[in-house]
Length: 280
Image (tube, rainbow, N blue to C red; front, top):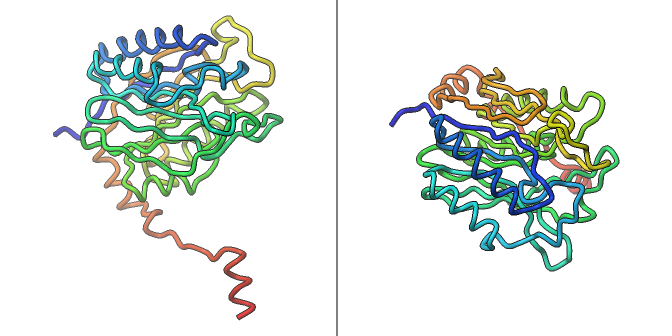
């Protein structure tokens, strides 16, 4: 089997209408497959953009919206990664990414919630607890969502569990320096974990001729694919666009041999462990 995989990042603007967003997924999946992609990564909040009520559209991962995404993946013979919202008993939703396609059907609930820069995701979203790595025809894919990208330990945990490529579906909040931070963090997480990172964000609504939704994180674009040595393999601007990139999984072994940061890591005791030791 070839070590090279062609992946696509569909940098789009989702709308308030879940059915309309299924059409966006269908159209961009068809375009990506026509260009030879076997994995298509969509942003966070593909079911409904941020800035709109979420609980009223939330569905289980076995519900109609996710099943429609499954049918799109099946029709095109491709793996799709896309953000949706699932219900909880508490009235909040979970910020969920589904990974569906030939031989794979999994989901990840966002662990790190975006309670930063004046936005409180935890007001309406409940956190997940479990990292996810799935096997896509011999490619081990780890999954992360937006604010997760600020937490190196998650990416190193995904690498420890076998991830070769980590997708980051995002709807990045705008603001001074935020695009620079997004690009820097994607490159840093690739270096921290010595994996490929495919960071796919919602496009900047203004770049597509539309308004932003107040303080909600509606996207800045600038999706990118980074290699395990921090080199950018492909990147977009602010507007909606499809990014197609070939990644060579053999690159991982060479990089990890010369830059063994995972093997060289050292752990440190927690504050609680230190206090317990001192009292003993």
